[in-house]
Length: 154
Length: 154
DNA sequence: TGAAAGAGGACTGATCGAGTCGGAGTTTGT
DNA sequence: ACAAACTCCGACTCGATCAGTCCTCTTTCA
Ligand code: SF4
Ligand code: SF4
Image (tube, rainbow over all chains, first blue to last red):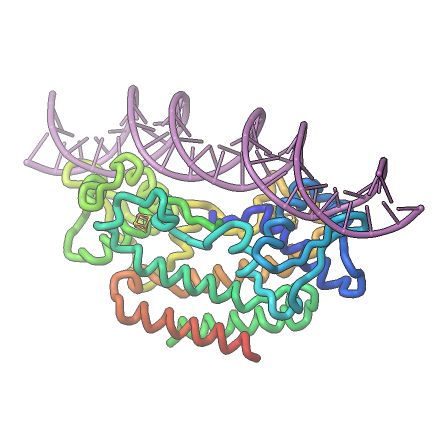
């Protein structure tokens, strides 16, 4: 099913919101949650995670909140997802703890890792800034499409 | 986490196996399951699903089994995953039944749909044949990588 | 006819994601 | 100094989904 968690989803929304309001010195988690109808405590946790990784800068106390620690253009969707959902892996044979017992016999692990890398590449090529500006994002997406089908033809 | 289900994983393994043994008229589910240590009944169900969609041709009775209904080169990983795990969607706001209530306010849905399309494109560009032949698969993957980073630079 | 194989539904246990709660620590305005 | 507003953090519940099993029926062929 290849589904992205909602937390990552929320994280992207929040970062986009912050990218759209660079003037606001600091935005509270509750503000963003109210704007989009996201459960406030859940979003808070997501933002905390992003802070821990260094994507956000937090600022406690009254009128506190969060702000981007870097320019929106330099934050990739990959970083966000990685920070929230942990390492991105297609297969189940990864996350050290409990790997698949078929690993020795498995013949598709290697090819799938390459697929995984390709997908990571796509995510790395998308920045928060792209989410805000629709035109360039659309251009880039269609560009990617062409490149992909091109590579298919070769 | 963007994880692929094990069923899809098994499906790919089975198809790869069939692609590697084109001489065998028909291979039973149990054969493949034993070869890789996959639970036989589970693999059987996966193969049944693939048969229903038309990727495989089944052949009941003694010495029965499955065979590819098309050339390995013309079967994409996307088809396989779609057949087993259902429609491929990154976000939770899709599968008609229970969509996300944030949809009207959501500002990242559209961009994420484009990301989704890019990923689907990657999967569409990988065929079962690519899983068998390591060299071309590696070449294609690295090619994709270059193209992706190229599109990032533009 | 009977063994071997596919087809398919129903069921259970395990895992994981979504969301909640409660409490502790911090900064700031007054 | 005090209280409000906010961040921080871990534990917890609940429900959905996945992995795997079981059982039954049908088809084929020796
Ligand atoms: S080892 Fe093979 S079967 Fe197991 S999770 Fe990895 S790719 Fe899938
Ligand atoms: S938050 Fe937006 S992108 Fe995510 S599931 Fe809801 S509508 Fe879709």
